[in-house]
Image 1 (cartoon, helix red, strand yellow):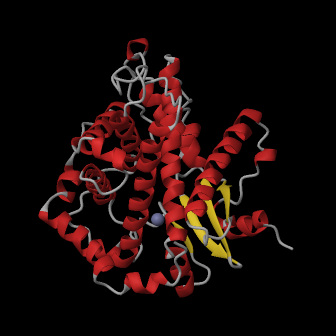
Image 2: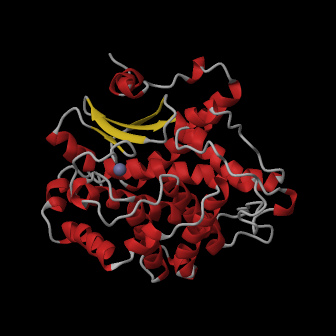
Length: 363
Ligand SMILES: [Zn+2]
């Protein structure tokens, strides 16, 4: 009998293969991945608790420097993969952000930090940053260091939640029915491969579910007795926590650039441009403030979602040394961007995609 680990390894061999923690030779690193795996499993279990038809999902790591996440089906089993580079690169970036006195000054004691030089070797590939001599730089304020780890966790839980949504909502079953060896991969599919608006609709759906799930999880924290986050010394502030969740995801998306939308043949891409995805996060969040979603979220002011996107832009500008750029977002909210978002939304409400995917859903 072939183990899920072996099936996983064979499926991702050309992407770096399965990461073998036991042989990593570093206990601290192995522990970090074990704890991340436990968080991922908890997220998967909670999705199954809400949707008992969801079959078991094997979660594992792919050994490569790039930030990426995968979902696929093999031998009637479901798999989610996260790259080791996602953990490493996000940890480097969020730690460095918080180690700078100008970023997120409202969390912890930013006066303990310094103004840092821009990170010349910034890359979305952790291996490349490592080879260029980039070291993990921890914030001096312990609370900011813990906060940086929390932001890293939020970004990764969003990625994993995005893959869970692809499986739960039948996207992977549908794509596997079209091509049995397909592996749904996030960030390497953006390189101008022929795609279509239909695939982008699946991406938007996965983003939306994962973001709502992150917000729901933040709002549930408030209901926990004795819930405490050290960067909220006077008790957890929901709007503040939602701001932070949103900041983490915008920051991750922003690492991939602020590409212009105009001039791109939107129909030729497998994934929506990041600026459109970021705009959709702001719209989804605002819907929560308007009363669609958990009751608690109504208390989060609408501008929280936009302001966190702006804060992510400023943080990005500080660690890269590039001027802030709002071009992509402005375009996303232009008539052109809105038309594309509407086209995607219409595929769900009026197109046959929803029907074709329906029989593969587990919710
Ligand atoms: Zn996706």
